[in-house]
Image (cartoon, rainbow, N blue to C red; front, side):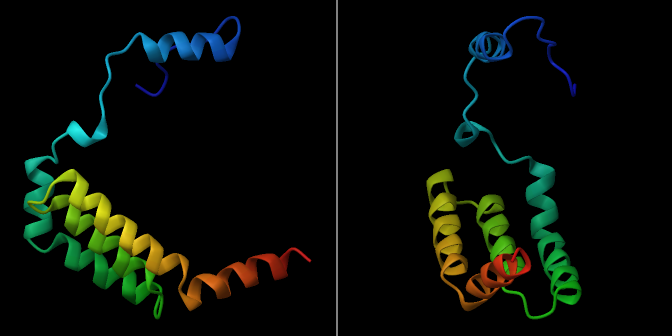
Length: 110
């Protein structure tokens, strides 16, 4: 559910106790659902990319996000997916668009 527990004392201590009471569940060990893989192979990611590119023309991040999702839904390992995500993030971080958006963000705060 949305609420697993309600703290009545020290929130930090109770949150730590609650978190440690559960067995570890690393995301790297969780399988991608078959339905998700099917949707990705059936054109779901291409459809999402087309929608994104039509709604935010000229932006490069949507295509990078789709490439990361394709890596996650593909047959590669979790580590290979992380490598794809790392490469895409680095490209976006050092892109001209990223610099321009940071400039715009700070310019609006002055």
